[in-house]
Amino acid sequence: MLVLALLHLFNQILLQEPAVSAGEPRSAQASTLEATPTPDSDSPKGAEIAATLEAAIKANAEETAQAGVTNGATATPLPSAGLQGQIVGGETAASDAWPWIVAIRAFTEPDSYTFCGGSLVAPSWVLTAAHCFVNAAPEQLTVTVGVHRLGSGQGHRFEVDRILLHPSYGYDFAHDFAHDLALLHLAQPAEAEQVAFLSPEDLDLAAPGTLSTVIGWGALSEDSAEGLLSYDLQQVELPIVSEDDCIDAMGRMINENLLCAGYSKGGKDACHGDSGSPLVVADGEGGWQLAGIVSFGIGCARPEFYGVYTRVSQYHDWILAQTSEEETAEEREPTVIMLPAVFNSEAVLRLPGIHNGLQSTPTPQTRTIVAQPAPVPDGLIRRARVPVLMYHYVSVPPPGADIYRRDLSVAPDLFRSHLQTLADAGYTTVSMYDLVEHLNQGAPLPEKPIILTFDDGYRDNYQNAFPLLQEFGMTAMFFVVTDYIDAQNPVYMSWDMAREMQAAGMFIESHGRNHASLRNRTDSYLVWQALGSAETIEYELGVRPRFVSYPFGRYDNSTIRVFESAGYWGGVTIEGGATHTTGNLFQLKRVRMRGTTSPAELLRLLSLNW
Image 1: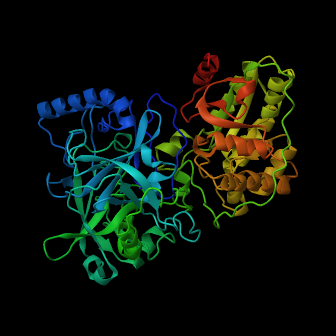
Image 2 (image 1 turned 120 degrees about the vertical axis):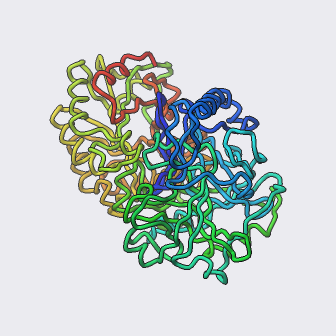
Image 3 (image 1 turned 180 degrees about the vertical axis):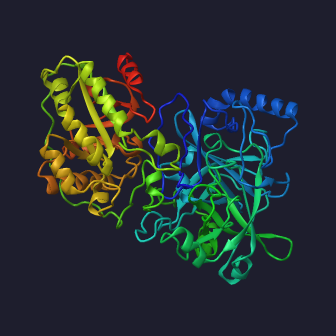
């Protein structure tokens, strides 16, 4: 289970930059271009893609009937048009066994959605994993209570009017996966059975060696059909593991707030798509109590590793306090969603965006913003076709790397071939400073200009990309996360490396302080991000950054207004395109480079009229 918060199945669409935590959260992101469970047709986003998926589900059912197979753990893999996979090593649950189980879809990306599980713990409250909902808004969620077969129309669908993350989620720098739990408030109470959650007085029910049951719609294996969800609800029995044994297997990330379950020989586990799903234990009276919430792991069902769950008993009082108090919409505090604090030397290398979160809660800035404007526009509206290539890693993914890491990793040899292809085709690298001066004042550009950008500031950018850029006499722009460099995170470049790169003609720009989404934020928070990252870069390098790459591509009008007021000249998105205009300097488009982007594919992308 590599921290999978937001697993994209990206067939023919651009992979959106993910929001993930380290290890591997077990959420799954599905694209409409792959066969996935039918979304709720009465949700705003679900209505748009339900028709596309209906045919795939029908084809799956027909093929299953003809083949005579079941959706159990030993079922023959279904055709690519159908649904396949489940909890690893488990079995199909009885249709009425878990009436309080919840399926959650977060439509946070175009043509795709994140899938997680949850449990109904009060009439209006669903308990699930926090990492599933970073950057999500309540109106983007669809919750179905009591469903067994996805896409069947079973269960009752509800809108969500509040996302409540645990207040410490994302702020525990000492422990990577702490406090990974969230409550979703339903717009209307559900008339369905609820599950009790384990209290500190009942810890014996979840003692080491106790058999627990994990329930969910996750994948058959960690590489099963790139993480497609299960068709029917699955379950698997796993023994609870002692904290000492789990620490021995999983390392320093484990603490008293986490619970481990599984077998040292592997073979049975939760997996992608199971994030937020319940781990329950028998209460001795014929019922069940919720003891854990699927959080993360290293791969799925690998020998010598265990699945890791948020230990519910540690949060009993907090859950009870929230679910017992019903506030009106006017009384509720605005939802603020932060990226979690995550870093682990074992699992971090498998993901494209493993980031350390805040070291402290941001405080409102009192300093007045003094804006230094971009070159004054001369009054003409200009258009310029300047491809901006977007890279992340420049390295070979490690063994067992997940779909994100593989997709966002351009091997050094491939990167060299990209540069050689650009040189042979007559392209000249320029900077965004050149682009803005051209759009605002008509400054000349070379005949075939191109801009190279790198997001996140990974250390392999310095070790692998930088020498090749120098070899070819090219320049590039590197968007760094300043808090990660300050924390001396070894996955990211150091300030000394950044200074060397800048002295050689590279540009170091802002990717925010902590890689948190910049959408739906207060002005004080945006000022903290804009000035904090800019002033840190200026302090370390002596040059004020003028461009921002929006983390996860998340921004809104407030983001643009604040960053422009803070003296930035423009911002780059993750939207595909190569043509820019004078009026869209804070919405510059880019062309994503993947681990599979061959030189021929690069030339094809550069030839597109976009």
